[in-house]
Length: 158
Ligand code: SME
Image 1: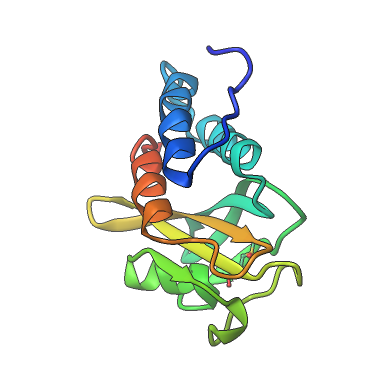
Image 2: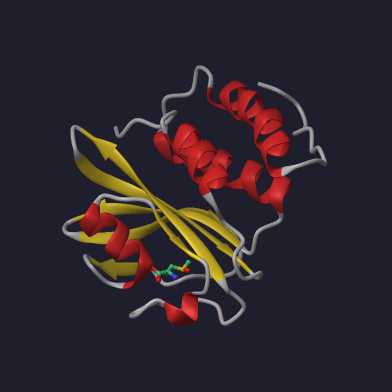
């Protein structure tokens, strides 16, 4: 495994391009999904210093909190609730530029201003979501969507 993560400055695209091979190296040879989710959260949080980066995993018709980095968070989310539950229900990536304008947004932290949620699919079924929260409005765009979707492709359900 690589030693320390190399943190780079530059455009968002340049940051993802430097981070992606490092995440691939971190996950190489490790099949445990929780361990891999944990390292993805740590790497993203270290590079981008977002407020919260974490996974929710589908368990018995609910999303249950998985590996994350950031402040404590709500542990269970029902299908269709909040940004995470909506992303799960629709099986779509959701980019929310202002969480206060998202009906039903679940405010785990009052500091969160914008959010992106990406579903992890296996045979067309959502088995987890990646949730990223920022203290800035309008933090996330199609560049985040492209690279975060690429990163979560590295994960397989057990
Ligand atoms: N804001 C999310 C809930 C999860 S926390 O932000 C960590 C939502 O509305 O689904």
